Amino acid sequence: MDYYAGIDVSMEYSSVCVVDCAGKIVREGKVASEVGALIIWFSSLGLNLVRIGLEAGPLSQWLFAGMRDAGLAVELLETRHVRNAFKTMPVKTDRKDARGIAELMRLGWFRPVHCKSMEAQETRAILTARKQMQAKLHDVEGSLRGILRGFGLKVGKTTPKTFEGRIRELVAGHPTLETVAAGMLSARAALLLAFNGFEKRVRVMARQDARARLLMTTPSVGAITALTYASAIDDPARFKSSKSVGAHFGMTPKKYQSGETDYSGRISKAGDGSVRTCLYEAAHVMLTRPVKGSALKSWATRLAKRAGMQKAKVALARKLAVIMHRMLVEGKPFNLAAQAA
Figure 1 (cartoon, rainbow, N blue to C red):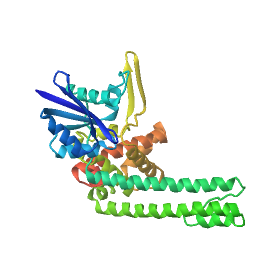
Figure 2: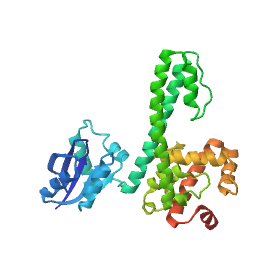
Figure 3: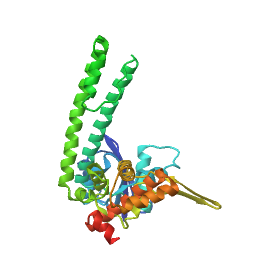
Figure 4: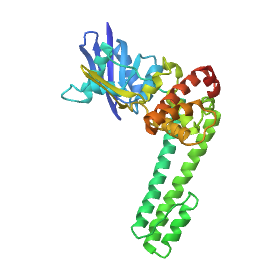
């Protein structure tokens, strides 16, 4: 007899449920959220487990990779689909979630999610840390400007190099403000040092990554956009068509049709938000700065005249996503890909 299992992953312990082909619960339990503990628990059952499902999350990719390497038939489920499937449950518990995932495995009502490679996860970790340092750096600088503004001291326009000198100049002779500025400027210096370190590391990674160098042949696509896109795609072969990449990253319009109602809304914004942001920024640069010999910019400019600049940028970002995926599949730089098209 075939059996199916569901895992509701938590930080310390995960709820596990095993059902047979008729949906009858065979075994339930709480297992430590560790790869070794889960492998031992499933091995001790002695059952023919056809599919084991777990919802995508922070710990899920690590557990999924370890269980897959151990030979277990494990599937990673898309969070939105699982959440929508469980909306009818009046009572939500970890135990019921595990039962629900096991039932989805038995019925086959799920869409598997790609588990990124370790290299892609490491790249994303570096990019995320860099973004966090940049955001905190801006927060500290904005807070300093706001504090001084309350005392009538206006910082004005500065550069990263002149910011500290301008702050010290304004607070000179104010003991309380000097104490505040000294502490916050010290924090800013530490954040700036960390950010510059991540920035340098990202540039080195872009030079060493063949896929990133290939994507950077596209106009307005730099190291950050190339690495973000390449790590999100990870395996280009997992997409049947390059056209589906735009929808995967939430850059296609929503659609609602029922009877006489037929509505097309704004873009869905599903999928990876960081990729969407980077592609939009690349489209913005292409449309607002001089780019010579780019048929893409000419197309987007014509579209902007008809539909407006905002929609043109989104459409150009979606087209960049499609073209860059095709570049990864064929291994050709942007110019050759355009000639082939």
